[in-house]
Length: 195
Image (cartoon, rainbow, N blue to C red; front, side):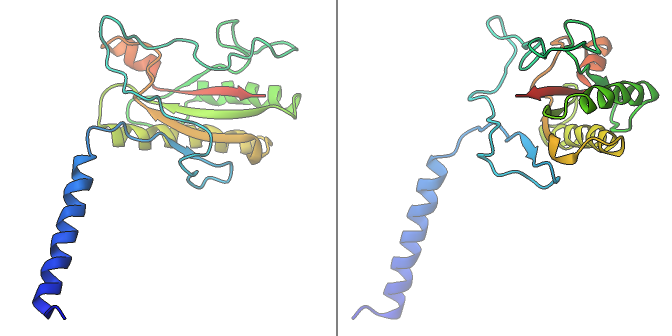
C-alpha cells in the first residue's frame, strides 16, 4: 500500500500534468459577444449568435463590413429610414455614454410606431462602440446602449419578448476610420430584423 506522501506526490503530479495540458491549449481568443435574452439575463453561449471565428484586424485584405445583416429590404410597407438604413435606422450615442439623446428618442418613437404595425417582427438591438477603450469596457458599454434602446421601446408599448439585446462592443465598426467622425458613426445601436 502506498504511503500517504506517495499518494500526495502522485496527486500533485497528476494536477501538474493537467495544468500543463490546459495551458498548452491556451492562446489568444476573441472575447465572447455579450448576448441577452428578451428578459435581460445573459444568454447561453450557444443561444444563436456566434462570434466570428477570427478577430478583425484591419489590414490590406480586411475591412469592416457596412450594411451587414438584415436590412429590412424584404419587408413590405413603408420604411422609416432611408433605403440604406432599412426600416429601423441606427441611433447614435455620445462618447462614453448610454444615455439616449433627444434625437435618439425621436427615432425610437418612429421605430415603435413601425413595430406596432408589424406585430410579428422581432428585433435584435445591437450595441456598438468606437475603437477607443478596452474590449471588456466596450462590450459592457455596448450592452448598456442596446438595453437603453430596448427599455425605451418597451416603455412605448413594444413587447419585451420581441426585443433581443446583444453587444458587439468595438468589434464591428461601421466606419473603419480613426478620427472623431468615424468614432461618432460607430457609437450606435443598430436594429436587425429577425424573420
